Amino acid sequence: MPSIIFFHPDGRRQQIEASEGESAMQAATRHDISGILAECGGNAMCATCHVYVDEAWLARLPAMGGDEDALLDGAAAERQANSRLSCQIRLAADLDGLVLSLPDRQT
Amino acid sequence: MSATSRIDHAASAQAAPAGVPNLDVDPFSTEFFEDPHPIHQALREAGPLVWLDKWGVYGVARYAEVHAVLNDPLTFCSSRGVGLSDFAKEKPWRPQSIILEADPPAHTRTRAVLAQVLSPTAMKGVREHFTAMAAAKVDELLARRSFDAVADLAEAYPLSVFPDAMGLKQEGRENLLPYASLVFNSFGPPNQLRQEAIERSAPHQAYVAAQCQRENLAPGGFGACVHARADAGDITAEEAPLLVRSLLSAGLDTTVNGIGAAIYCLARFPDQLQRLRGDPTLARNAFEEAIRYESPVQTFFRTTTREVELAGHRIGEGEKVLMFLGAANRDPRRWENPDSYDVTRRTSGHVGFGSGIHMCVGQLLARVEGEVMLAAIARKVAAIEITGPVKRRYNNTLRGLESLPITISPA
Image (cartoon, rainbow over all chains, first blue to last red; front, top):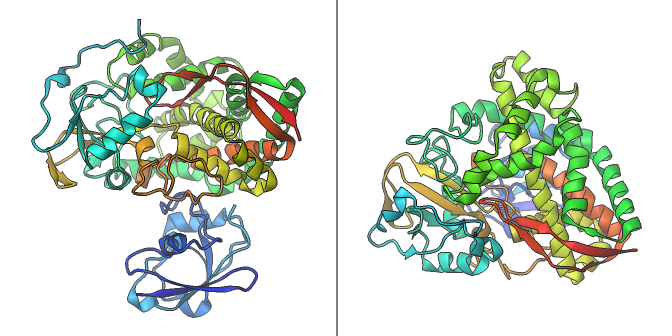
């Protein structure tokens, strides 16, 4: 089971256990991570599950699609080079220990 | 005469497939519109897949199956209509929608256009104005104190922002709500609601057809943005008016019923209004929870493109499947205390806006309208009291009120 480490904007660290095959967003909502809203439920339509990916992990994630790219431009918090939508990060064993930071706002 | 007097439908003679529990309930009847919840429960408890004798169709009312059908658009298609009418057998009452009533790959292209026109970036452009208009509306209503929350708020606020955001002309806007009501009635069976709506539709259809044309849409509005995508070559010049039509069909009555649902919830559950007042940042979630709780869009159909197994039953090709979104949104298998309205609930995953590739393309616009209105109420209104008879509005697809007399007091 891959684990994910979230860092909240206040620096608080929260580690959760995810299941292979689910998205980082699904794991986060299941564990009630407060900084992930996921208003559209994982359909890549709302940009409210925005995360900043730790540099060490960025290249290991699946490539970004055009929908995700366009949505991130409208995210509530500033888009950065390591911005992703967590609903588009499918978890596999090789992502065990993934480190994601939460933006200060999602809407 | 009842609003839904029974008109026999050819399919009603069809027997239930072996092993599939059948129910003699009509989700397009006055009884259902008045109180769908006992019927929802009966549908959910009968099994994961049911047969509706009255209309000769399958139904799914549990969250898992509704979600599964919504997310398998190649098996459960939309191009044969998302109402009872099967476009493979019956001519659509209006030219077929090129987004709602389309499947991939055709759908993918048109969907991308509306998704861009109504993107998070586009919402940043309207948010400030929508916020100011919501505050002004609440101030105006506080000066009156007593009013009808349907006509004077749930309808008046979207009417004060949406037509202008679209870039519509001033003349003829009175056609917008009747046209939307017609569209949502048309997804139902050939009952009195549907037949009368279509019989009276000519002037509303003529208005909408004209208003979708480029020359009738103000620069900078959502309508003009759709036409601009024809210049970019993403859609043809003939497709642009049809996509504008989709925005006019689904962009107004839905938010009217969404905001109406939220006001009705806050009026019935004063403890939730007080929680919202204590933390106005809950406004967006309070709106979202009202969408889950009331499900303004109650049902949609899909049609099977092949033989498929669902919940252990075999469904043949060309069968209509009715999805009960409202029942899924209160399925105790998915939701804790599903029948309580809780402004702090984690609502992610509800199917009030659908799910999958056809999930409401205007959901972000709906959320902006709902959020800024509830935020204005949270800051300015201390109490909401229902002061007269609450009347329901009957529509084959939309759940909402005809009248909600309330009195509000200032914070």
